[in-house]
Structures are given as structure tokens and as C-alpha cells.
Image (cartoon, rainbow, N blue to C red; front, side, top):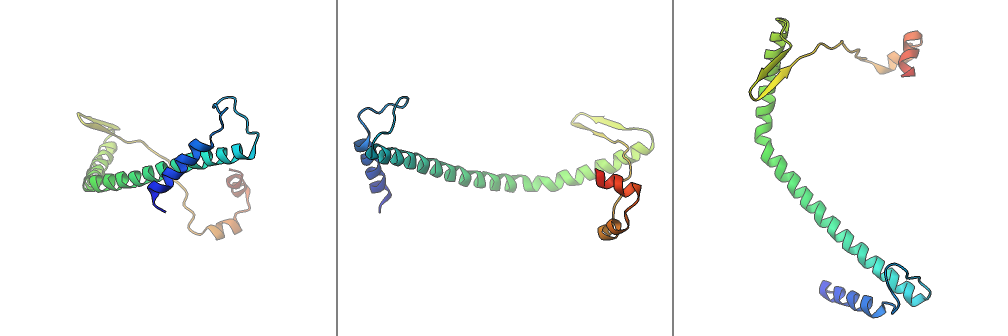
Length: 139
């Protein structure tokens, strides 16, 4: 069935089936015809919501694709210069400078504790039964 014909039929059925005493606030369904009309109104509203949601998702995908395409050339530049500035900041940190401030931004370093890396999780779990392992598992 053609979309325009379907919409026209839906509009006709909604207007023709609307109860005479209908108002949004105090209406109560008392007959099967009113229930059919109410279900038709509900279905029509839900179809409109679904169509709007689908259209919005399509546009979001297009906008996200545009954003990815537009920012891609700059991402490698950002990564490159961030790496250079990070190396420079590390060298400066070795000389005691923790914060470098420039007109377009700043670079800051801070000391962090070394992290434990478990190479073989199964061996660690099978052998880890002492007080340290219990503390780790309690976390």
C-alpha cells in the first residue's frame, strides 16, 4: 500500500473514530470502539516516534562519519606532537621541572608508582594463597 494512502486512511480512521466526549485530561475508555480508537492513536504516535528516531539515528551516523573523516588528518598530528612534548617534558622532569607553560597550553608531569603486571593469571591464582593474595582478592 502506498505510504500516502496509508497515512490518509490512518488520519481518517483517527478523526472518524474519535469519541465525541474525548478530551486529553478526563477521558475514560468505556466501549470497545473507544478502545480500538485509543489503540490506533497509540500505534500512530509510536510509529511517528519510531520514524523520527530512525531518521535521527541515520543523521547521527552521517554526522559521526563526517566528524571521523574531518578529524582524521589532524589526529596523527596531535599524536605526533603529544609524543614529542611528552619526551621533552620527561627530559625536563629529570632536571626538576614538573610543569611547562606555553601560550597555547601546558605540559605537566607527575611521578607514579610502578604497577604490578601479572604475566600468567592462572599461575598467579593457583599459587596465590598467602596474605597478599587474600588482600588482592578482597579488593
